[in-house]
Image (cartoon, rainbow, N blue to C red):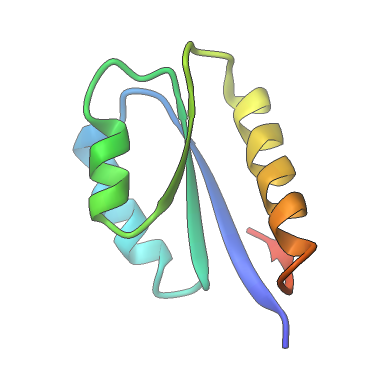
Length: 86
């Protein structure tokens, strides 16, 4: 059975991110947040809301955030069955 993963790139999104993750989890099996060098509590909020977090040490941009997320899922998928992205 296929599973669906949502990848959310985020930069200084602590205010809105928690509710976005909680709403997204209603429709997908896993949420991965790519914290793109945020200086606020984006990473903490994402973890508290139930997301898995990948963190960049500096802001690399939305494209690199998505690429990091896809690479993570690709590596993870070798042992699991996550093969759809949202």
